[in-house]
Length: 183
Ligand code: FES
Image (cartoon, rainbow, N blue to C red; front, side, top):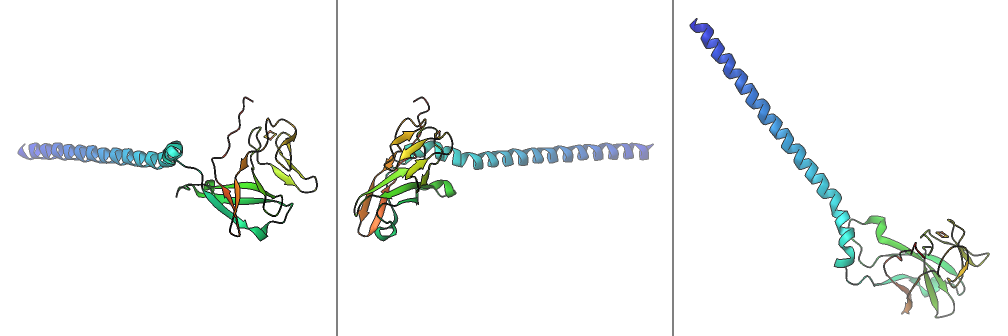
């Protein structure tokens, strides 16, 4: 009788201890998954909030960027140049680079156009044989000076400032122009 009582008590205690272990394991796993979820959410939100706050934190998006030397661009040529944004963030990768069409008019006069079509923002291409910029999306066409020749673009290509500094050609960065879908 005594043996049976002892065994019962033992079983009872053993089952309680198993329950306690189960409970703490479950608690531990719940905590781990909560912390992992919070960590993943934090990782995802860093670039999101960075991009959101960028215009507030970066007061001056205008920085002169070297895009080549004077001799790299023949007079009358239009060349695609790539350069870093004004304030590249370490997590931005290739999105921190932008491009422009650089046209050399004379010995000292350059023009630089944003690659984005002013209709809905598709990248325009320079067609040397026609001396025109063409937009592949809806047939927008621009003259070599960036003004609209045909199609839906509501206005000329946006221009960047260009300067010759010593022997270097430099473009002044500015935010990528947004298209006005209502125009
Ligand atoms: S985006 Fe260029 S014509 Fe529509």
